Length: 329
Ligand code: SF4
Image (cartoon, rainbow, N blue to C red; front, side):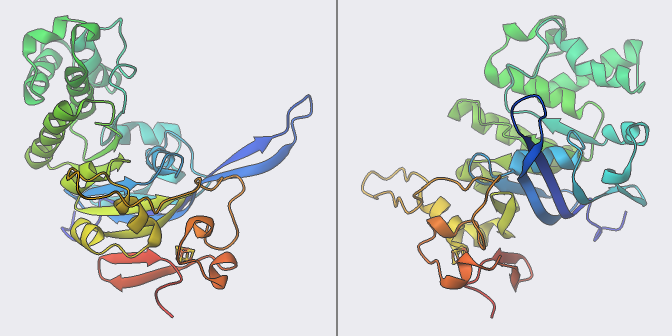
């Protein structure tokens, strides 16, 4: 793979869910546009954050990329060695070998591990499913992976209930990484953990990225976590990207009013600094979004044009794009 080739190119990705009427006939009466025309690249070794309020479509985007959900439209181009494959076009049988290269770390370490399986079986199961190793080779790989994530090889005979939340998340990470994927989608991977444990797991994810050359799509709602771990950040609102930028410039000079409001709402540890509650109102309904810019009912900068026209992408610099009528022409 050329160093300048993205590992992942997401182009005009859409995921719509039909809404049906109640009753016997169950006619389709609407569409929820959970992901609506989302495009971005992800370079090898990079961490891209996807942030936004609950229901903005960030998790659905991650799932549609990995084909845990079938996209409604768009392309997801994955670089598999020298080959570029469009994941959206593959049949299940063609997708299966690629699953080893794309993995997901889930939010809830309590719910994502089978309580009836030992840790060794949980972590080693993907090797069995994909026929990558068995017997002593599989055991050795599981033991090595447990050590890599900060657990001990002897932990493999225990069950998930014997572990703390942070340790369970380490087990989930070990399971995701045992097949040596290149792309890992971290879906709120540290959101369910205590703050001190969060820091440990974030450091672990960063160390593993360095060691194994991983590329992360990091889905989160906590902006301080995103600031710490991500190279670039895409801010989503009602199924669309509102702003996409390198992390430093997004935090130092946010352009989109929604990004500005999200950042202003982050609690400041200094008790003398008042919180700016500029983000008022409810998130728009993706089944019935407002016309024009879907943020306009909550936007302090709203203009007449915002209520009529959907904003298009404006490139502010090579690594900073915004979708807002305040910019461009
Ligand atoms: Fe606000 Fe208009 Fe920009 Fe939307 S397009 S964020 S309503 S200024």
